[in-house]
Length: 391
Image (tube, helix red, strand yellow):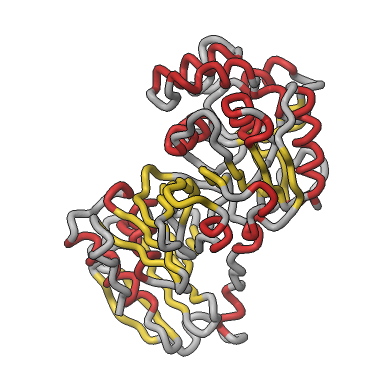
């Protein structure tokens, strides 16, 4: 049993622990006690790690009910689907594609949402249905609409909700499009991450409405965004905390394989060599990646790790025109870089990191985002201070 397992393995124990951590506001306590997490968890799950995105081996309720219940009432995420439902069995699939989120994050995001009696809420990403059940318990079934892209997941969530005595509206559809049927909404919450805030979420919301969603650039790093919708159809707000959610399916980034960048040649192919004093190890934190990604659009990174503790950090652009590598070795003060293509990706990433460093290494809470009909803009400290694009 992990260190994150609650002392009392029960709905009351979960709710009490979240209140003690400061994640769960007291006005949400009755909903968390009434809507049990276990009612929304399938027979086979893959427990995750608190604050991480790694999954442990599967736990089967039929084979080990005690371990299954301990996982359910631990403050950890639970993967419930792999590979868009194409994976079967108890082994791990390639990519987790549906889950029951970490209770601390669920509670914190609901607190960010700041609901009150009579409000109508649109949820994007029904998943197992637990979050929709909590909202329905607080606001009433008729005030909650939830959109799920996966028909099988949506069907299971609907059954879970009915078994829990809740009947919010569950709609199968593309979350980018929201759901017009119950619009306008007072609140919108997403349980999947986005790179671009869909326009429908804003147009289907009332002026003054709050939108809470995980947001992250292609490069990496992610945080919870809390937007307020303006009278003019824009939305703006700050990031509140770090997060790590599965992407909205329609906004997944296609990450080409390294061999597609090398054009059949062996590394370093036609790359240009140079040296840098910036360690690849210094740019791998979640906040650092977020700040880099906000400045370096259309790029992502991949580490290639070796048994001796060294690794190569690969940088790729999403257009499959440019790549770069930076080799990390412990105790070195200079690191070899190779770059190829029209974009000097390492130079862009290094410039972005150095900007972040000169700004005092800001955390997520100093960043914000403004969404307009023509696009979106990440800013630091205030909307009038947009984050620059790395040269």
